Length: 355
Image 1 (cartoon, rainbow, N blue to C red):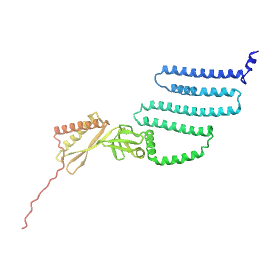
Image 2 (cartoon, rainbow, N blue to C red):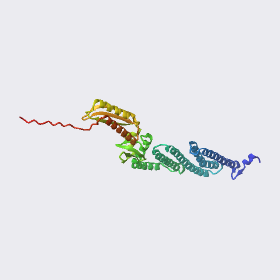
Image 3 (spheres, rainbow, N blue to C red):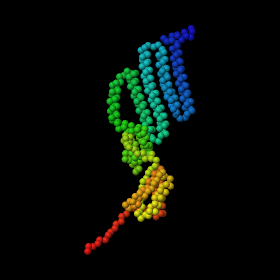
Image 4 (spheres, one colour):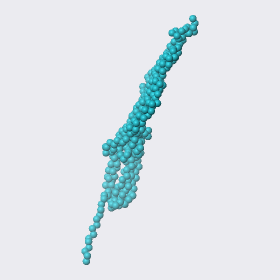
């Protein structure tokens, strides 16, 4: 008996070559799986942290580990001569297993994407993306499992899903109507994350409140005002509000007026303006400054002073202004320049008696 004749020999109703082909299919599946696993282990050993290439290999490995045995079994069964009725049952069973496998692999892919995005999210200052990424992953996985379940019912169990979809549509509308505020706040949080009008710690003016951003959550944003009050503002309101981010200003401007008494001579008035310009120009916090004698007030000669401070930290800003104010007062006292304060001169005329 030749080799070819041996392969054509029938065993339990099937030729020997069919059994040999099945063995080769399983061996090839095992070899492919081991090659990918070896490549993944080498990549993992070279890189201690997760890389994009390593994540891709993990996804491929998961697919091969679950998909290769199923494909090998299905191909092997179709190589054998079996009754058509049994083959239909096997095909239906394979379709069910393959559908669940695809859903599982897609869910694992979402988990891998979430893990990768969380690594990048930890490098950002805002904690909002740390909350949005897991939430988005859960929503995506829920959508995948929902669609997969519908496909399983229709293609595997031959269930008519039209009535089910109609019921889900009505129920979805009811749930969306009941949760519209929550959904609006979540979408507001997404818009804050995308637009990034501020981050935690920024000084802002928002909805009539001025303070620093304390937290940015999925439902609301919390602002700590300068007097210590905590204000909670829904994200849908924040997304539609006019926001003034005070922290992104290059400088902090301060306008004030210094009044000198009317008895001040022109020479001393010019000297006062010179002192103001000199003190502000020499201070390290000054980005820009100006001082001009601009008005004759009701009870004082007014000097307009404008100062741009390059320090955004509020405590440092106050300390800088205090240092300049002390220096201005000290030098005014040395020059004999007097500050004005509200005064009134009342002249009383004697009443003349009628003759």
